[in-house]
Image 1 (cartoon, rainbow, N blue to C red):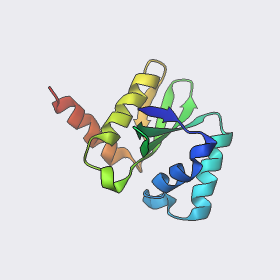
Image 2: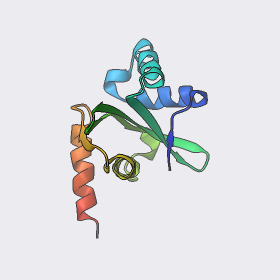
Image 3: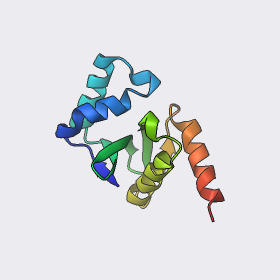
Length: 122
């Protein structure tokens, strides 16, 4: 289930984002979290199953009709179970009626793979 980021989940969100190569540095992670908290055009969502938060997906509203997926990460011990694809599908469910959804360069390869996998499902 996709939930909106809340301050009480900051350490978990930072831990998940740290799995992305461009977010390894602690200062960069803190800056990224602060941007999600302060900028109304940035939305960070977390993927929760039971009591566990297993993934994060961050989006940015660029203009009145476009939304960019900037961050997409899954806890390494839960990868290859379709969590990233389910997060993308939920983002489409939530936002596609208002925005064209596109991936940033850092998530483009996974996004394209997830979209292809989704098309191959019966």
